[in-house]
Length: 323
Length: 303
Image 1 (cartoon, rainbow over the protein chains, first blue to last red):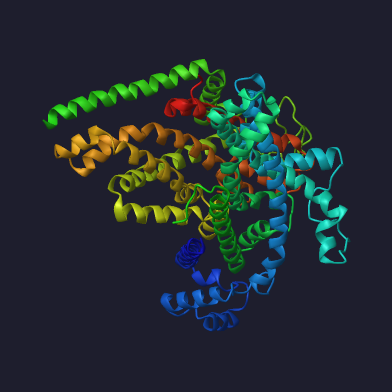
Image 2 (image 1 turned 90 degrees about the vertical axis):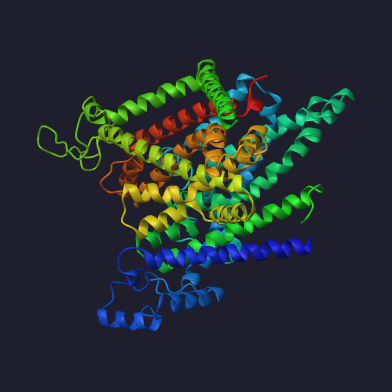
């Protein structure tokens, strides 16, 4: 087991290394002046020359590359042009906001998806099931940013129920970290982006749960349970759903990974101060070190989630052996 | 000997292909949702091709009322079905112009991705060994790259243009197709007619593209349908964030202008139509793809 984990972590580090290399090349080999992406073009030429010299941007690509990797290992992503501080310190505060929004959305989507999917498998072929599938596909087709804007329009502007953007009301000062994330004000701000993100996520657990349930319901032990005279509800939830849950749960961990990328748009629409929004703003401001740093952090997050998915699967299903 | 086998597997192949198409069409007629989807896709195609004729106005034209004032953010009327923008432009005409952009991006990216993914999948699955390991390692690495952020970085570094969006989308999405096609190739390669072809001395290229390819076409087509949706969503998202081609009117761009100018909280007629267009087109593709899926994967057929 521990050998397997070590090997997986090792291969993860290699992947991360290759992705960082791709990022390095992308930022240097793009058409135009590569120093424009490294040193703020708005500062005067002499000072700029000095910084280019100090950062070693006149060196050969090989020297630059080793330096880039050295810094990366020390978690040094360079300084943001816009904030004038290190990119890491800018992003550190944003990571928590992103993770909280994502977990809230995943819990909601999986809660509805698992029960809804089990119900759909049970009512297979009914009108209700076709309607549920159609709704799921519409949710999946609707671009998240558009759903977000429409939700803001309906629930904040027309009905005035919920705040339209941000993570807390202006002027609200949290006394401590606990209050930042567990106050009523924060929860109100959390509802709308969570629901919109969950709407987008929903199709995956819903359809997956339905399909695995259909498979499980055809198994012998279900017939056995029915023959014993158990109630339909008991057969469905205690016998079938538990066994169908396994692939859905592991797919969930895998899905969190890809969801990080999609969340960029939700954060942008709701002005949610997270990693994704910061990345869009950095790219819009041509703040390349910050964009580069947030990209690498997101890639690392995805890989960690993939690792978690693999380990979770091995843990939950004893039939899987570690190789 | 080779001639005989060739002829045999060819007729076999043709019969099978025809069967797939027939099954698909039969399914389409039976499945009312898929039929509606197919008709809607046709309509979108017609709008994309004849957009210039259908659109009542030029997208750039700034409309003025009788007193010469610009019709700024006006509600829908008989003159402007979907109202006007803050520069007095006709939203209806813009949505029609956006159809073409969506179709071009969706179509081209899907074709590129499917071609690349299928080729890599076939090569990887057919040769196996270190080629397979190497290609699949590359696929793994591409799976670890966050999609939308990658496209943002790439498009922000390059000049914003429609081609760069297509390129960025294609660069990442081939991974899914490659993996699926590969697993299909692995099972096809075990079939007797492949072994027969190899024994009779057919070259690798011939086996891969004459005998294996026809068997992975259905699954590749299915993936292509999903890729159309993927690409259209990606283009809309990129354009919405403001990294799209400024010269190409697209559905995402329409929403982008409404959003950054602060009208997304009042002008529902400006925001809603492009979004509804995206939903309609994508749901249509999903329904048609589902019908195709039932043909590709017989286990899904209604019992």
